[in-house]
Image (cartoon, one colour):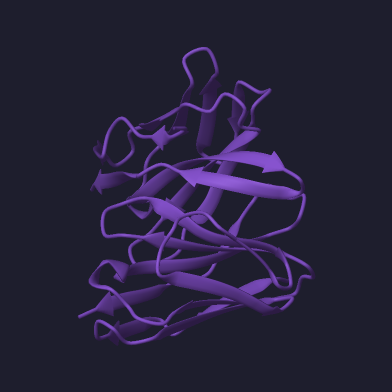
Length: 112
Length: 114
């Protein structure tokens, strides 16, 4: 069976500090991978998606970046966090031709 | 631009009654639609989907209706239970080049009254 992991589960970081969130998928190969952000009381906003190793597409301009160093590893990073970066970050995967996206447990980031 | 939105931000329903959660979409080119359930502090969970060439699809206690004329999507939950309390998101999916672009609505909070 397939599983998706995210860590850390929660994170409190000061403004201006770097960020690295990790997402890994098990039990599947060559998945499409996604990073979403959910602000409090808001819907999900697609940040990045990847259809393969080293292939990253950004949906919105921001101070965040994403990388996919391995087939089933997706990393969300920032060099300097802003207060507005606070939120719930979700990683998801899907099969190339599948319809359903499977979400990870999420990381709650608070920037102080 | 294209958007997916919900009519009601919060819905309170008596336990045992039926719930109807609505969603409006604007991208007529979307290939299919999904309803997700998100419990507090957790990631969204897939409930049911419907292809754009269908009008209705039924699952276990849930039914999704798609009205392409007015670009409206609804999720019906039969015999609502306390465990159904959560935020429900509709999403529209556009498939292009093997990649699926998902646009989520803001969500409706369903509160089940025991």
